[in-house]
Length: 160
Image (tube, rainbow, N blue to C red):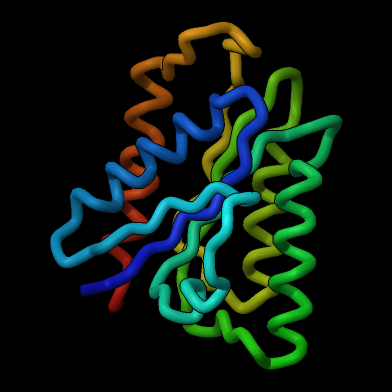
């Protein structure tokens, strides 16, 4: 079995809905197991060592990735520098949502992943969160399809 780990942060719930569909896409590939982890809930960083692919998701807040995702990346950076975590040879990409502008921020998240040693195998996916904090949160069908294909594409690249 191959392992995909999806770590995300979400404020309004929109990025979380995206994460759920990314996971569906990755799980649609045979011999792929997926863990979905919301930053802020306890999980072992060792899960990243065991992963074949890592996918990160963040909302764009005031022109940047969320404070929580920045914190996660700083922790990961420290672990890589201290050689307690190796991301070399892993694949992945990033996704996220923004309200006004910020698709470039999600591309920057992918670049940060690449700097940590993760090989980016799919373009970052960013979509406009037109829902704000409206309930219930629903993804438009084109967004849903984009997220599903994104997860599936990354999972299909494992072992290549």
